[in-house]
Amino acid sequence: MQRLRKLAPAVLAFTFVTGAFASPGQVGSKFSAVNSSGEANVARETPNARASSWSNTLSARSPGFFSDRFALRAALQSKRANYENTLLRDRFGNQTKLSDSFDSLENSLEAGLDFSARGHQASLGHGRMLSASPYPFHAWNAGYSYGFFSGTTTLGGNFSSMRMGVPGTFYTDPRDFSARRRPESLTSQRMEIFGEQVLSETWKVLLRGFEGVRFEDRPKHLGAEMRLGHAFADRWFARLDLGSLREGRNQKLKDERGYFSLYWAEVEATFEPIYDLSLSAAFGTTVERESIPYKQITNQVASDNYGLRAAYRGNPWTLALAGALTRSNTDFRSRSLIAELSWEI
Image 1 (cartoon, rainbow, N blue to C red):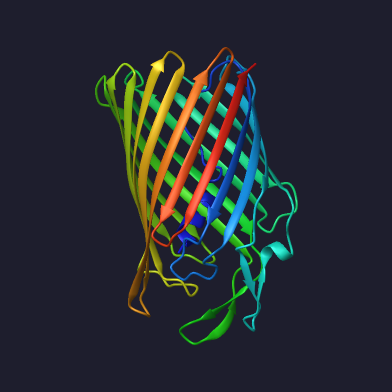
Image 2 (image 1 turned 90 degrees about the vertical axis):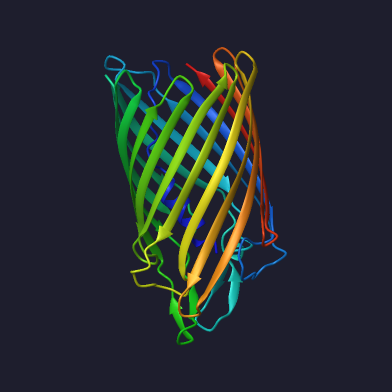
C-alpha cells in the first residue's frame, strides 16, 4: 500500500523550489533519524517489523555572482538505511531480506545553478548516487517562475526526471498465478505548474497542479494542491494544505497492484515569542486507497501525522530542531528527529 508514497519521493527528490537567494553564501548540515515499527500495508508480511535509519546532509551555496544574479549550490547526503523489511523473491517464491546482501553507507550528491533577476527566477540541477546502493539513481530538474505586480503574484513551473535501479525480484500475478519479474530500472517524470497570490495583508494562497508517471510499472497520475496562509497577528501565523493525487483508471495495470489514490490535509501554526525565535506545531492526515478491479475490492491506509519544530536565527547562524510522529490504522508507527544548522559566509 505504500507504492504511491514511495513513488512521490522518487519523483520529488530533486524538484525545484522557488525562492530568491541572497547575496551571502551559506553552508549547512541537516541530520535526521527515523525509527519505525509495524508495516504501513494492509497485507502485513512483517507485522512486527522494526527499523531504524539515519541520514546527514552537508550543503553549501555560493555567494551571488555576476551582479548577484547567479549562485551555485551543492548537497552531499550520507545515509544508513535499514533494509530488514525489504523482501526479495525468486521465481519459486523463496524470500530473502535485502539487508542480507546490502548493509552499507550510501552517498548521493545534488548540484545546481540558480538565477534571479527582476522577478525572474530559474534553477537547473542534477543529482546522482555516488556509492554502491540497491537503488542507484540519477536525476535532473529545471524550474522557472516570474513574480509581478510588485511581487504579489507569482507564476511558474517545474520539470523533473529520474532514472533509478531497483533490486531484482519476482511477484505472483494473482490473475493467472504465474511468476513475473519486476522491472529493475524505473524512469519517472513530473511536470508541475503553480501560481501564488497575495490576497491581502494577512492572506496568501498557492495553487499547484502536477502530472507524473513512472513508465515501467505505474499508470500516469494527476494531482493538485492548495496552500493557504494567514497571519492572525504580528507573531501568529497559520497554514492549511489540502491535496490529492489519483492514478488514471483508463490505463492498463502493469503488476499485481491496483490503482492508487492519495489525499492529504495539514494544518500548521507558528508563533514567534521573541525576535528570531519561531515555534511551530502541525497536524495532518493522509489517506491512501488502492482499488483492485479484478478483485473488486478497495484497500485503505489512513495515517495521522504530528510535528513540532523550533528555530532560532542568530548572527550569522540558524539552528532548528524538529520532531514528527506518524500513526496508521495498520498499527504502523514512525518517529523522526531532525536537527539543522546553517551558517552564512
